[in-house]
Amino acid sequence: MSREIVLQQWVECQSDVCSIWKGLSDTEWLNRAMGNERLEVKSASPDDSAARYQVKTRLGGFEVSWTEKPYEFDFMKSLKVQRDMQSGPVERLCIAYLTEARGLGSRVGITLTLTPRTVLLSPIIRLSASSTLKKLVTAIEVLDQALVRNGQPPALPPSHPVHQERLDRAAAALQEAGAGALGRRLVELVAHAPDDQVMRIRPYELAAEWSAPRRDVLAACLLAVKAGLLQLQWDVVCPSCRTGASSIDSLGELTAHGFCQLCEIGFGLDFDDSVEATFRPVVGVRQVEAGPYCVGSPARMPHVVSQAILPTAGRALLRVPDEEGLFRLFMRGGKAALVTSRVGGATWAEVPDGAEDWPERLQLSPSAEIAVQSGGESERHVKLEKASWANLAATARDVMMLPLFRREFSAQVLRPGLSLQVQRFALVFTDLTGSTELYAHAGDAEAFRFVQAHFEVLTRAVEANGGAVVKTMGDAVMAAFPDELAAVAGACAMLRDFEGFRSLDPLGARTSLKLGVFGGPGFVATANKVLDYFGQTVNVAARLQGEAQPGQLVLPTEVADQAIARGLFDAVHVSERYLATLKGVDAPLQVARVRLTSLSADRAA
Image (tube, rainbow, N blue to C red; front, side, top):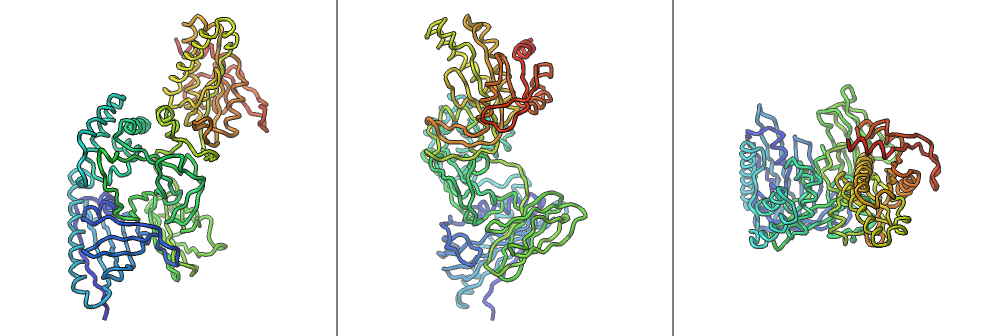
């Protein structure tokens, strides 16, 4: 006689299936809403199962533990969590959800399956399971009502009240720092938002929610750190599941490589994708119950559209979404294949789990199914994910482009000897011509005053165009920008503003400015106690500045043409296009000269 207990119930919802799935798949919120206790999580010892974590908590009044497997789900259709319990009165627990569209609304089917350790425990387990099912139904009903009212899941009350006096002090300091309306919104967030919304504040998510510029929200969060409201933390992000593999408080704790326990892959760190800046309230202002309350929430992996457990013998089925696009098939351990979804493609694909037979590409139709066959080695998880998605991560690359970060967080540097890659950035190098003669003619004090004043002019131009001054060298500036066009805009502003500055200073007639712009990949490392850029991109940018004549900007012709198309300057301002042979650069580079005089005069007019 089977000891298995199965309870089922459908919940009718007024909200559409997309909205109800968004809330249901946020199992962190769902478990908090049900009143579940937090989890104690640690890495599981490697074995032949798909489980990657060891979990302890209390369920239904019992202390229980289990090894956690990845959740199985099909976007907007189904979600399943199965746990093989190591302690407690239950051997196995499985919770499965189905979501279906019902006219303008939807419905959620819940199946709760439990296997007691002994028949004698069945009545107690059935009673506990009934209580759990009732809590689930209530949570989904509350979720549905909130979605109908305002389109958002209901906010859960904070677990701890804020320390009002400290909050007020931080709010005052934030406003004094010039954070404005964004600062006030951050204070409100810390004061009233539920724990799950503030335990890992992502500035770009807030920017999307508040319809505010990303850079401004990120800067406001950094100001909130200085004001004592928030604490900065760095998440090392897995390139596959896009969740935090680890979290640290300082860039100095970074190493060259990371490891994701869930995906079982190691990866090299870079500043573009692997390191994300997030924030949380300062403990003295508000204590947050950080949890976790779940391990594998699909809401944490919005790019994953289907995920399944591949048994040691058998197969796992994944479904392509009902849309065209590019996806990636991934198996734990690193195997991957590009999946193209196009109308007219195959409706079925079988993928053998063998190193030689694993495909590089699959051509399928929307709603096609992929059957991954087991090689019999061990139980693993497989998933289908979007090849590209909206990136809401404020990466270390973005943060170090902020002048505020460079000024106020100078202690945040990499450990000596460590360099991390940056896939794309752009640099502007400047040189103040005539400065040597200026010192001889005007004397040290006046010449120094002029050089420092010209630094201030250039710095304002850089920061107004989304860049940051990396360092000054004698009378030269090295400034970094997110891309070449931002760098060109900054360079044009530097030329224009310097021309106005020198025209008003008695010493200005003896000086001029030369600039070079170049972008590409490189490395970030700590040098002279600051984060600095290194690599061939830096060398070429410096060499292009050396190619410039007084009052000129030199840049690659391709970038010049893009700048002209963007309206940053006109074609008539390009005085020459030529093939430049640069020291230390193997191949000649096609470059363009932009004339200062006509550019400055036209812009001033």
